[in-house]
Image (cartoon, rainbow over all chains, first blue to last red; front, side, top):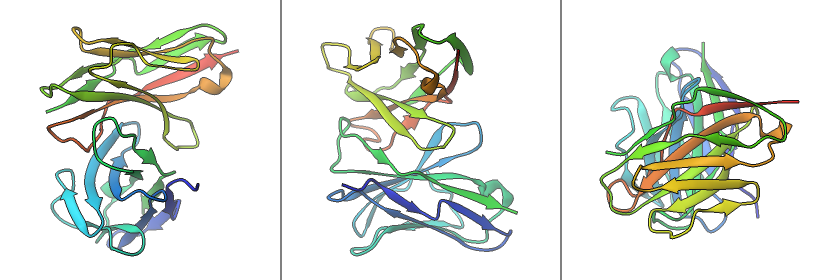
Length: 115
Length: 116
């Protein structure tokens, strides 16, 4: 049973370009979460999605960031017009259902570097 | 709002010794879950152990145990017989059942170094 897949693992973008990060949840998981980790910090929640629905985007910056989880295909985190401050590790996690006791399984992360 | 505090930025321990990583939390949720994750230098997040707020006993998973003291709002991770491979960042996290039920709130982490 494959784990959470994220690609690319490393992404380099120049300021002003767009970054697209992909996440394929574990088989049978319909809940996806995105977190951002700045250097030397803990992970910060960004957004929680179920298929075709954004459930909680309270951690998403108001501009330039968007996320989707279509009926078919991976979840996408999109960052438009990237700036140096967007450089971070972006982690996707999935769970089989909601609830405080259900573990979120993390992907390996995408390291975004903005030059 | 939920908050996790890890007060030890770094810890150095001799191999085979036990180590305790501190974690305190704050929440107004009556029911919540507490988690510990390990992040080695390769960067992935590895789930270690879970404790539910209403669990009667402290959680254990192999060499990992969670010293849960609800009245003190602490959830310290204990690693017995430490190994060189335990060197990593360790994050404490929590998730409420009612408020913000889905998102994990993480602490700043503790960097553990095991010396041979």
